[in-house]
Image (cartoon, rainbow, N blue to C red):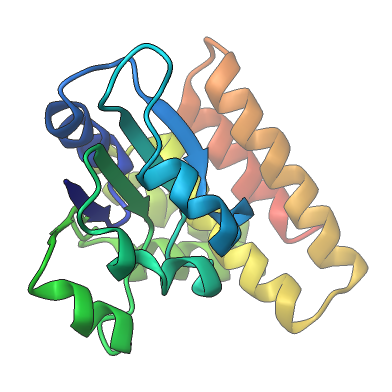
Length: 202
């Protein structure tokens, strides 16, 4: 049996994958590395120790030549979970598979402060003190590591638009901030505030 799990909430998806595979001891295969010629040995071959296998294939749908062969292996005797970040529901392969295997989506809850987080970042680029005051109003509702992740996503957009020295420095500082947040016992919001105060002078 094959089932496709997708979405940005990989933690919840993996819990359901373990239930579906009925074991924590499953094979992991990187779907992006597969060729169509690899598929028979994955979907049809038995292992030396068991007639059925539990397999997780990650990021398979991004590998179009191999993924498009999936309908040929729907009669697999194995339990196979496919985990991807997103699914193109307009594609012909999705339309072919939809009625034959189950797709299950896992999405992270939308952050109501998302636009405000980006406003804080934009404000900090010119006025760190004002940005810190804006942050203080919402920080009780936010997770500092997730907040840092959103700052990184915005900084990456800036870098893609203009790959200048300042944009590189901001990304370096954000990577340090991310590491510090994950490894220090200091007050995490103080670290974030310190970054916002420095941002305009980077």
